[in-house]
Image 1 (cartoon, helix red, strand yellow):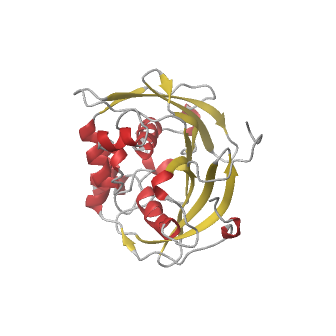
Image 2: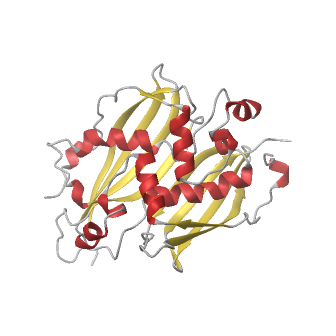
Length: 156
Length: 142
């Protein structure tokens, strides 16, 4: 079953607040073998002009993927997550994520396309502080393999 | 030390980076990121869904490629935009060595707004694993 294109433009309610911790940032930096002191040492981060340790640029995926759950688990949309692969990812940082941030995420369905038997779902996660300051815009393309109609002759 | 705009020219090559990725690294990234998809740690599951073996998280590859840029600028907070396509998976065998992700990059443009665009190449086992990977960084002005 192809995905319902009437979902394009849909916005889901904000996620619960995510509190960014110094140790979580350190753990993420260790996992990607990033040695920068700005992920570990608050004094080094302050010397570089930040109020506290900052997160690596792809840390925002923790928030965007969690927020995608609302779409992935929406029974009306009916996405088969076992067939989903990550096609593209883009982060636009309005400022770095930093320890002490209290963040929430609103996800939007920007586009749904069927091509050569696959569904392409473009999802945008707007990450802001609880006060509404923009922090990061994360755009993801999720590809559901083999879920779309494959009319003969198209994109052969 | 952080890089300044005056120190950068279009066409500059970034210092290359080679990062080994083992099964243990995938388990660690799964825990840190919260992405526990079994294709990243369970060979039986991975082959059942048609993959050659366990594969690295695309987001781990993206994070390693991001290090190429942040280690060059010295300031991980300088990345304004970072974008990749996942074109081919990084296959991580359980042979004690794992996979090697090889990263290189080049200054594609110096923009009037004080940003620099870097294009990134990521390869593993002799093949490109990211497509159209690029980052826009804000550098200190002189």
